[in-house]
Length: 593
Picture 1 (spheres, rainbow, N blue to C red):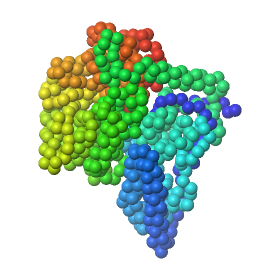
Picture 2 (cartoon, rainbow, N blue to C red; picture 1 turned 90 degrees about the horizontal axis):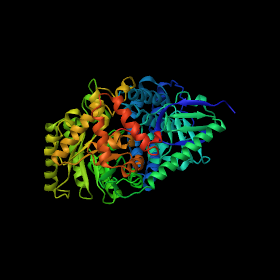
Picture 3 (tube, rainbow, N blue to C red; picture 1 turned 120 degrees about the vertical axis):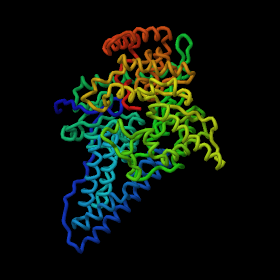
Picture 4 (cartoon, helix red, strand yellow; picture 1 turned 180 degrees about the vertical axis):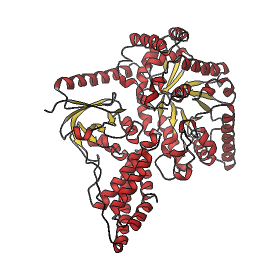
């Protein structure tokens, strides 16, 4: 056996998979060839025929996914179909054939590479990872042009196989569960890519960004994919395999033990009720959220419908998406966050100036104000859905009362418009604010006068507090959730809300980390929303704790001057008290809110 080798990448979906490697065929390589002028119409006809044929195949697959109730997969494929037919691909390729007199496949490769490179240069990590969607479309079109068979995970492999490829397309990710594969590793991609989101929903271990993966792995090599730590071990020895099998079994047992500790309402040892909700972004995630013990959806990210498509989602499409969530919840409430997205993430027709620093520019509620047509369409859909089940609307990145008042004005106009049309909706629809900016955290007492509820988004709140981009590795050392400044901001926000009698929750990464549970509840929070998989560990901590001991820890932490001192106090206490709950790195969130 070849010597063992450890490759590092990025953890994209938790868990450990062990099995033989199956290498997916790499993307199509095209040798560009010149054509004579009289063959230009022939090549254009080849292009149009290939586009039509590829679209028909995607349509069949999309319909099948819809019939299998994989609604997000259906929407994703419909988005791919629209991108395939978009003038930037079809028109751009046709113009290249005509101007440069090259064969259709060479023109397709040039156009796809140019669009993919444009995405690859974008600063926003989510947008960079949309490159995979463009390349997947291009690869399918090229295979049709060249008469090559489609390469997909939509076939059966030996049970326990681990897929290896240069990149995993979202379409292939949808097929992974039925293929027999139990894990996947890719040279490229990111943890916020569509493929990563899909595999997390399927609970399939996934590691991305593994440099040199394809050259290091051969068919049949035994692999360990550690989706929690972001590592791939090639040809591990028997002792290493045993260690990973034991760790995998321990984690499964740990999760099962935590889940078995109860699924009803969560109450502290001294009888204080704490609500645990789920952060999701697709209707298909509701069932898993309920299985892990979620009492509600505390954060539904509505961006999914807007991304990777050449046109905006219709009001009806957004309405049906919200209704699907509410129906799956069976009467439990759901909080829908309006678009938390920058102009560059939308189709070109809706694009807005990016500015020098997108994180500090036009995004979230600011974008909604600059494009009220898009905002009103979303509000109409959500208001209509409120007639179906308990629904709340939450505005992201509100910085102060003026923005909240403007958002409320648009909501009031939407309600009046629907009332005139005779459309049913909840006349007492709760409207809330996501506390993500220091200015909002310091003024919840004022915001409370125009808001029904609050939810703290700690991811942005922390990065704005330290002026440190959480995606920038060079300043990652500044990102400390337990920094005294963060604790003071949280206390200010919570005290302001509680003093005004307005419910306040938390839906950022801190909520799902059991190491922070005492701090958050000790500060006065009584509602936490997190990734579904993290609920059992947090539930277990709460059920074994009293409010007075949590408040005592917070009181002591607030007297300390540095983040290291607070971390030593809090983490030391929690690790000693809750070794099972804090036992695995898999309990750490990997997706932002």
